[in-house]
Length: 216
Ligand SMILES: Nc1ncnc2c1ncn2[C@@H]1O[C@H](COP(=O)(O)OP(=O)(O)OP(=O)(O)O)[C@@H](O)[C@H]1O
Ligand SMILES: O=P(O)(O)OC[C@H]1O[C@H](OP(=O)(O)OP(=O)(O)O)[C@H](O)[C@@H]1O
Figure 1 (cartoon, rainbow, N blue to C red):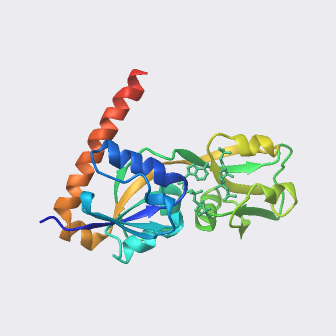
Figure 2: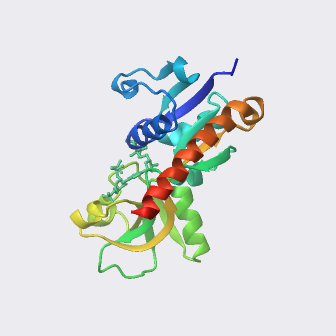
C-alpha cells in the first residue's frame, strides 16, 4: 500500500492552477478544497493530504518534514533559502521579479529600496556593487516610491497593470518566476516511489501543455 503524501499547498493565487495541473495529471482533487476554512484536508482518492499553507511558509513545512512535498513560487524559494529539494518547474503562476521606480528616478547617494523580499533585494544590489538600505514591507509595495518611503522597489510584475495604474516603470527584470514542486530530503528517500510517480504524471502533462503552446 502506497504511503499518504503530505502536500503543502499554497493558499491563494497558485492553488487553483496547481489543483488544475494535478487533475490534468489524473489525480482526483475535489472542487471544494479551498471553499472552506479547513487547513488539513485528506484526499483519500489521491492518497494525499493537503496542508493549506500561506505561500511563504510552504518551504518551512517541507524543510521540517511535516509536509513531504510542497508547491511554491521560485520567488519564495530564493527568499527563504530553505534546505529542500527542488524537483520540478511546474510552469504555472508565471511572473518576474523586477526593480521598479518612478520614471524620473535618478541614482543618488542614500538609496532606499522597499520590498517583500529583503534577502533577494540585498543579494541583487550587493552583486551590482550598489549600497542600499532595504526596507521590508508586507504588501502594496508600489506605495513606497509614490509616497516617498523608498527610491525603488523590488517586486513582482505579472501583467504590468499595477505599475501602469501607479505611474511606475520597470527598470530591470532580475529573474523569471514560476511555481516549483519541492520535497523534504528524508521524504524524498522514504516515499520515493510515490514522489517519482507524481513527478512523472506531472511531467507528462507539462510536456503535453508545452506541445500545445509551441503549436499555437
Ligand atoms: N501577479 C502576481 N503577484 C504576486 N505573485 C504572483 C503573481 N503571479 C504569480 N505569483 C506567484 O504567486 C505566489 C503567491 O502569491 P499570493 O499573492 O497568492 O501570495 P502572497 O503574496 O503570500 O499573498 P498573501 O500575503 O495575501 O497570503 C507568489 O509567491 C508568486 O510565486
Ligand atoms: O503586474 P500585475 O499583474 O499588476 O501584478 C503585480 C502585482 O501583484 C502582486 O501584488 P498582490 O496582488 O500580491 O498584492 P500585495 O502585494 O499588496 O499583497 C505584486 O506585488 C504586484 O503588486
